Image 1 (cartoon, helix red, strand yellow):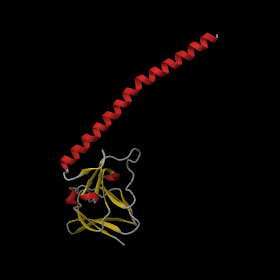
Image 2 (spheres, rainbow, N blue to C red):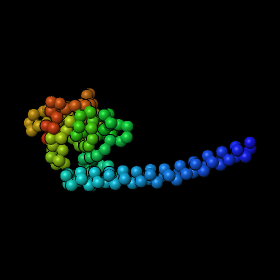
Image 3 (cartoon, rainbow, N blue to C red):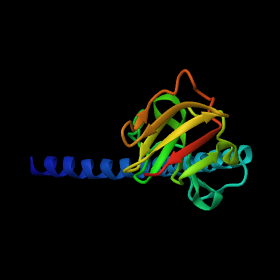
Image 4 (tube, rainbow, N blue to C red):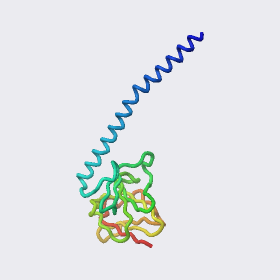
Length: 169
């Protein structure tokens, strides 16, 4: 009986080791594959929107950090307004769908500077005061600000904005 228990324990240990050996290369390969896919996405984004400097595999800085583009949402944040504190963000898709651009400067800023004109479908304002208006030439489309932080869908003005104006208070 004791030898049967020892045999089962030894067999369980061998199977556990075999499982580790079999699964580790697959998960390591998946991580390498995911990183390669992220780098390819970054390369393609920069080819379509030149002038940026990669910060990491998921973020690109434009204008010396004036605009930061994040290509993919962090795990678990899909459909959530997730603009970092101290920025206002705009998203390429409704319900905060990525890519996401973020700015913080006051005053008027042409979105064409970073090739973000006609791409905004939702927005989030995460600053303590002030507001930002989204414009199509001289027409004010919508606002987000300290009093009204989110707009999950810019409809009926999806993909219209070509500049923003932030009022700092």
